[in-house]
Image (cartoon, rainbow, N blue to C red; front, side, top):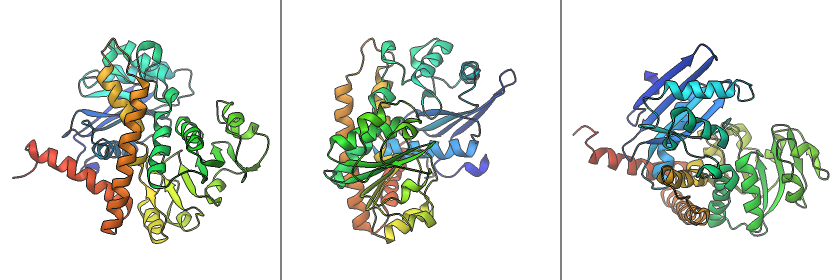
Length: 370
């Protein structure tokens, strides 16, 4: 774990295990100079500490990039979310971290966890303060139901690459991809291809999103009649104006970046492109809107949820959408302008902005050498 540490963090890494369920878990609090650590919790059967630490660092930059006062953190549970013992494993995880939750970290939602799981966390620790992303019926902000992250991905894109009449390819048909598809369409774009874990479907004339999204799981791609069905991964190479990887990290490397046939890439997922890929795309004149700028709609909603988690009043979804649109559109313009001025990649420009804000906070707190 020492090898994960640099001048920014992580400040704390806590590993827990439970023999009864076989659960293994980790909490990484990366940097709290701008506020307490806040980030999602994911559940995956092959999760690693390094993976969670990388995601915690992304959260540090994401909060600073959107200029909201929380710090970077992330948690992960190595367990199969499809298991019938999922609830027992989740309860064991938060119970073993009761010293840190919610005083130092509040559970949010990431891959493998749902709004119902957030409710279970609140129940296990007997406080509404333990988790955000809970169902609407419990006074929460249901991120997936509202589609806040995907909404923000499309809003940020439209600010710097106007979407009216543009073709869009989306990798991933989870909560982010679905909401992004809807908002892309509302902003005048034509979604020509989507993929899920089961494959991809392409129609150059545009997919019928009403029919496609009527099926609520990954099988939507297989059940869609019309268009051409393709193997997973081939959708990334379809000629398009906008490519939106909204699935997993590390899907576009330098070799693939050299073969993409798009004019603009927006990162709906966390870390979908490698540093080398970003450099290849920059050399080809293809802008990449970084993840911690483009998909920060979720953290804006989380900020509202954090503020309201002990309140008897629900946050207003209209206010959340409006703030996401305003902040992400402004940040997208700022980052791409800074990249053009400095001659760097948008990732470098965005990270420089975020690092400057975190560095200033660390300096003011006396956390840096004099």
